[in-house]
Image (cartoon, rainbow, N blue to C red):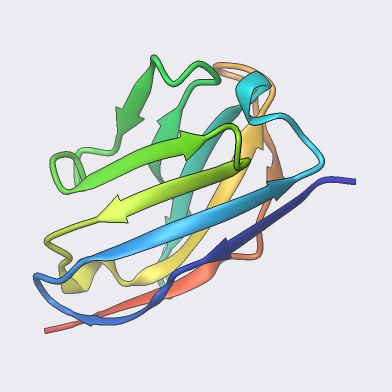
Length: 119
C-alpha cells in the first residue's frame, strides 16, 4: 500500500520561508514522477512543481519559479519543497503526488499540509 505524508506547513510572515517534506512509503521515488500541488480556499487545485524520477527534469508553475525549489532524496524516500520569499497568495493546502511517468495522471496523493502566509 502506498502512503504519502506531508509535513512542514505552518504560519509564516510574508517574505519568510518554509520547507515542506513528503515522506513516501510503498513506492520507489526513483521510478516515479513526483509533484507538488496546492489548493487555496474556493479555488481549483493547481500545479506547483514536479521532478522526474532521475531528478534531471524539473518544472515549476510561473507563479513560484525562482522562489520555490523541488528536490528529492531517493535514499530517504522523501520529496521536498523549499519555499522562499513567501507571499500571502501562496496560502493554500499543499499536497504531494506521484505518477508513473511524464504526462500520466498523478495516482497517489497525500492528505496535504496547510501553509498560511500573513501579510
